[in-house]
Image (cartoon, rainbow, N blue to C red; front, side, top):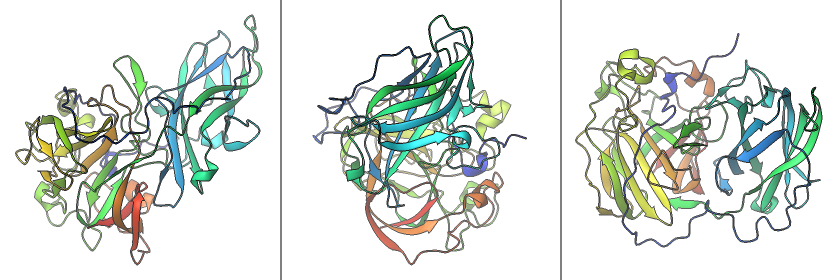
Length: 434
């Protein structure tokens, strides 16, 4: 039996379809943002040997860059689109990520259960995806069909990360243009810049104790990492580094009292803060609160009311300069303190946390992206300037929870509290914000 998709019990934002586009004003911030075009010289010296390649590999985003997680590792995360451009069935057996200038140096290898494993919980598995994104049933890629492959690299230090990578593909398929049967495949493809800058340092969008980074980066199986979407004529993922911030009390409970009332949830109505100086370029403040326990996308009646304008609920998009845009979603109706064109400073109060749009419980979805529209943008990695790390919530406890998020969700063995700076909380990290 195939494992079920990650349920709404993890406050799944699922595939964002919301349009947040708006013309933006110039920002006072002039920070050069990473994640744009390939850094000068990054791909110099990277050579792809000439070969017939029945399976084509194309990165679905611009170059990226490492960021430091709360696991004390430097992460690089991006996605590839694989297409069987032949009339012969193909199978992906293994993909190695190698140093672009020294292909003999293997940085990571993905094969077997890492590609396909129907019984695997969220983790280092099921990286081969149907489009736009679902677990692939097997490693086969039928003729003239496409798949996605989610790549996550980890380094102990920045010095271990090369400027660019290549991808060494192993499998079977058409070895020559006139081939009529599968044969072994073994070739290099898809040079990719992973030194396109440095992560933006921002402040926290919320404050206080016991905030859990639900659906964060980078384990496969959680909704944001796997939320590839086909929008505006291209495949992309603006949510790749997004977090659903959800707060618990000192007992680890997400609500106290009547679970059917939004006001029972610990974080409902919490203050939302601007993460950086910038200009508000888009807002929506018309959506009423949902009843807890029901994800609108999973209810036929409610799903019919979701549109590209309201799927992310009441929200704010802020131009924070240097080509980066902060998005705050699922906000409480009537709580917005800003309007389009307003200049805000880091730490300014901009709204309150709610339960609107495609959401089954109160939380605040936050992400950085390289444009003001989710339909156009690519997700950008970032780090938060200061917080206290308390440990990790058990994935099993989240996956076992009902749609009201009943239970206790603090780390099983809470840390004494470790001060952290300039890190991105990993999925299910629990933190205190000053």
